[in-house]
Image (cartoon, rainbow over all chains, first blue to last red; front, side):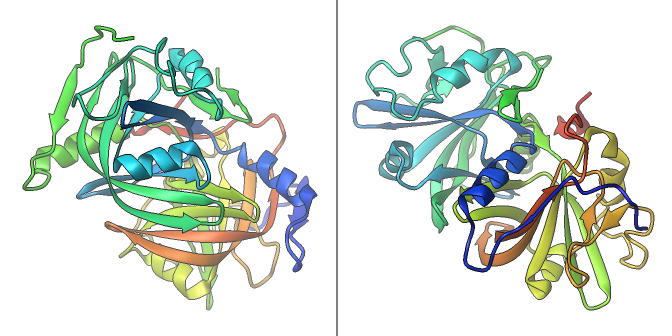
Length: 179
Length: 179
């Protein structure tokens, strides 16, 4: 069935490669994909690192396996690589302030989690965010470079919830939290 | 800061590997990650294949690059591999019926898109879903096996919207569409 809905925007990327305008349009169009907001955490040496992410997905139920996409040159990609273990905490609708606090790439690691309620399953493991709809503790199984990002594939070591079953998700859509 | 929120569920996967109960719990916990619903399409030979997905993400703005996770043994993974080109259409809130219609893995390919309004940018390219908040036409750049799934990494060839700027997203959360 062919319909006649107007195509309001259409852009073909030139053979020579994407222009600045293409990158802007891609960014704007990509923001139409609604995404549950989560926090990736890793503990290395005396440091806790944590960053807000929306680019993660499940790749298998057996064994339970997740991946997160991290900018390859980011401090978080480095911490995860060094630690070999990491956490993913899926945030609830009332945790926008947590997402905002951990959304700044350049924040000092000292005191990063100071104001953010968290816990650890394993004293040497990653911090996990209190109130998360779901949390997963993962061991890196594989890493894959994809364009500017590193896909970190992790096998689930432990998992749980830290919120009420009635809690709602924090969702990012068009660069805002969905109300 | 350590808080005392109760951890309602916690499960450590045994060293010998996940049990059936672990897989069920992982599935239930994973459903807490809210996800924008999309449709992957590919055209090969005389056939259009299409399947509803929630596991996709952007891996780069430069060049614009997306990936989708497909069950490795699925017909869709095969069609995408054969075609080398595919489409991703991000659905709007009123397109739950489209998502449902394309959510059955075993549906016959004959007539699969017969009742679903779609268009093509390229006559030989993938179908794209009318009314989508955003659509992307991609060329496979790389594929990666991750547990039971294949991560198909694609560079964007063309992109656009097929909906009103006021359209809202179709979101899956805890195995239902979010209202």
